[in-house]
Amino acid sequence: MIIDRIEEQERYYALHPDMELAFAFLAEAADLEPGRYELENGLFASITEGDTIQIDQARIEAHKNYIDLQYCISGGERMAWAHIQELNLEESLEERDCYFYTGKSTALSIRPGMFYIMFPSDGHKPGCHQEYPKHYRKVVVKIPVVNK
Image (tube, rainbow, N blue to C red; front, side):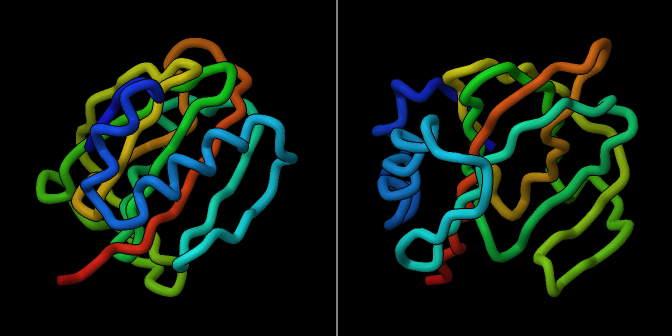
């Protein structure tokens, strides 16, 4: 997992051949309508807007085929993270590349202008709150995993 501010994005371009492309989409996403956007090289993005859910009610998820680049445009959220080796697999939805886990996680605050990158080993609970619901607007770019 990586968490940082958008101003620091260039230091992460070397992580994946299409990381710069993913960040370039974030630069134009603030003015786009919610929905799914197809990008080059198998990348796609979702712009969502909504209210956070109670963190204890959310499930920990992970993805084997995609890296998540999640960026907070406005509002904010709490997200939780745990390495999947420290979790118990609860449900596999292979056709959706979504795997749900149970176990303990660490919660962090995500504010506007912040992003986080989740790799296949990173279990996460996005779009949450601990005390009070918060309205948010965010972008998630799905970057296909490169197997060398």
